[in-house]
Image (cartoon, rainbow, N blue to C red):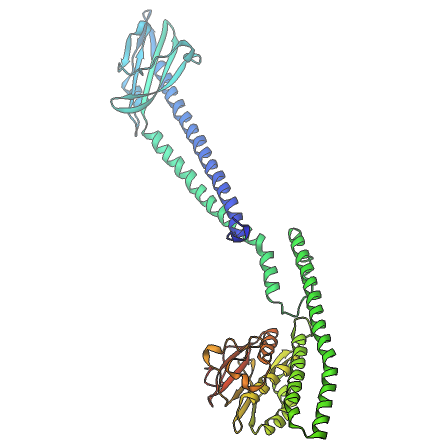
Length: 462
């Protein structure tokens, strides 16, 4: 499978997938080892108790009249053989296998060799009367021969001890496991935090900010990544600068011959009064507007200019006279409802953006119609809105009108299809949004805003 088609893996999940199973395995192994060590220690302690009991029984043997006798007094029996939890059985054999005291038949089925009694005793596991037991066989040399003492007990105390050991091991291990998992996840999160900070830093950048990130404030492991990002930003800035200069230079080179051509056509039209030159004059004027809009597009490319505090109302007021003359020539009522609209941006580009909206409205509004320009702010976010009483824009075309050279059903306005594309480009460069809806007069309403709240036209509800 092509690596591009593979789903991207989460670095956090990959780290946890590597760390958590290993940590869990280590903790489980530690718990099992602790359990067996504690269990073996408890088993050894109970085995020593059995051996001491066997030694105590062996000490009860006495020599009387040259013969070996074994007698267990009731007090000694009570002390040696009474147990709160387990049943204790014993058997004491003298020379030649004579049973001195206790129960016969306690020996396990498996036999033992002399090598098993190197230390004088051997422990065994057996089943007596259907109950598992642990026992010891002690060969004790005494005066007049040797005794074989067998003592066995059920496993109740041992099982209780195992349960206590298991609980004492399991609870701390669970707490340790929980704490370790939390520590691992916290450590992974802390280790990945520089990546998140880097992402936030990149996300907060505007399209005009192509300055290097710098590797000083990031961990050493991220230096290669940051350095490559800086090189990419440098190449991008170079490419955008080359594109912007090309468009700007081309447009500037076109303006001089086009201006000369327009002057010659106007002069010839005045001298000859030939109406056949009017279409040519209209085409040249349209070409001049196209060149001017190409220049605006070049200026709207990221990295062109720096932003500064400004007021949208002041920008509109500065350009109002030119728009009024255009409106008077078209017999359109151009009105203004201006309020303070402080924002941060590039004044040259924002004037171009608002100018394109007003020019678009004046072009598509019929004679006798009206155009209204509004500025203001809502919840601290500035907006500018341009409404007209023209034919409006069908809902199915409202998303397309911002595409370059798309004119739709409004081709009769004489535009070149770049005005609204420039509006969207400049608005995007300033972090603003552009929406199109229906004006109160039934025409189009264009809203450029920095928030989702406005009070301009029916298409923009409060």
